[in-house]
Length: 356
Length: 145
Image 1 (cartoon, chains in turn yellow, cyan):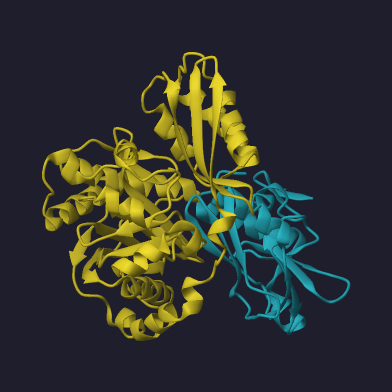
Image 2 (cartoon, rainbow over the protein chains, first blue to last red):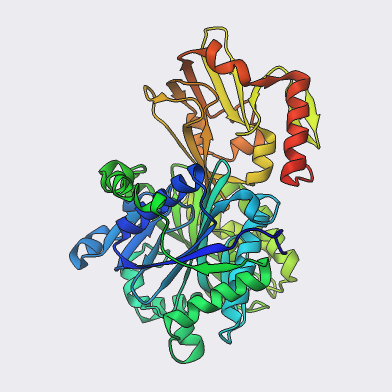
């Protein structure tokens, strides 16, 4: 889907920075875009090692804060939605900041889809087969390689994503809370079945500049965007110090301070006609929401990616929604659980949630 | 109940159409604000709600709460200046209430307005609101609720 002819976007690479500076630049970009005559910005950003929670998340619920403190890993809150993630200098962040009319019309889900399709098209020029996975992920053969999220404030929006160029899964598991009881080799292989990196797919990590150019090419191809490379506009940098002060105020990180004990790890096992099904969940007891789920057990299911697709569809959903979501995934993918039905998956989730 | 492209737009409420928010003046002088059904349709299923706390002063067209849907975060901008009286505990527990009942149990905030007469002059209501939403939906390329 191409957008109508418009002035070229400005590509800015802000390099390797601490997390608080990157968040402050996001705030400054949004404010400058709302108030000034600047072109759409396509920013590349990298982070010193950081753990970032989504805008509405509680750091204590999502992260192992003791480990972060001991290892000197910065903890920050994004302006955008979605889940917690880790960033280290091997990864590339990309983001668009623009007025709403600079991108294709449609609702927010449609807009996410178009942006993710553009990013996936770019990654494909590197020789991988990336595709969009609802709601906001980019995947290769069922494995996530890029997560995304956005903020829209009036007429101005910022949408950002990651590209996993390399990934230390063991370290990721120590930083992020995941719905796996024991952090061992099995846990690492479980995550490796769900997340991948360009290095894992291509045999070696491509140069960062090569990945950047690939992403820009994807946005040229899919959305018809035109780019000029340059420096960050003065209207952004002039308010950057003020924004950095706001981000460094403890009030910013602590918008949501719900306790980890309000989001326990729970698990349940169900013996069903098609086998034994286990669900481990991070359970938001305040909102009755399944925040993350990991299915395991002794069963056969086709296609093989059905399990990870169900897990992706069940991220941060209310317990009352799981029946409809599972029925939808089963129907769309023509899943054959060899006796396992959507209601069995729903039942094991309820068992985990309601019977600690 | 007015309807525009399948979206319910109650004609007795007041609207800031640009920001897609509604306002109801209560008998005690307070105001209740919330997201329109059109805003809900654009956003999709809402999964998070973080309101400004009671006692906070909000300026006109500034955020009274933040919501999240499909990993998009967005502010709900108050149509008038005022002080937050209360936020919605039911929505905090189940943000999906905003989608289910945007003009009822899914309200976003209650405020004591600072200058209701001064701030409310540009808000639209009745047939004017319906026409303004039709125009906005055309500009947004919106098919319907």
